[in-house]
Image 1 (cartoon, rainbow, N blue to C red):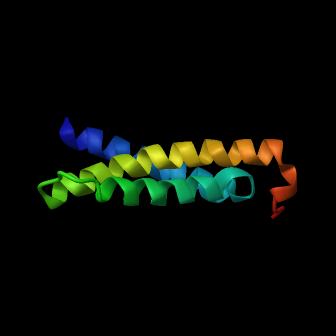
Image 2 (image 1 turned 135 degrees about the vertical axis):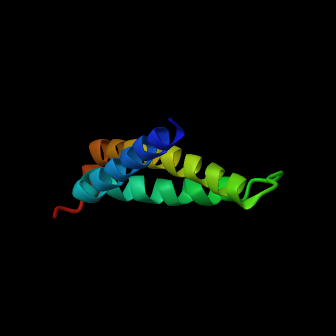
Length: 87
């Protein structure tokens, strides 16, 4: 059961990365930047004991950051279309 949960979680993350790559002109930049920022911020949180605990928190930061970044990029694209770069 734990392996199935891990595979589904990884598949969801890869689908979000694919969405950011395919829709790079709309909000993909925000999604990829948000995932990197979320990972970095969650890995260096104080009070972590082991490397696996840090990587687990970094993965959570990736998942949260990609969603927030993708939405932020879409909002910026919608309200300020002059920042859009057509493909």
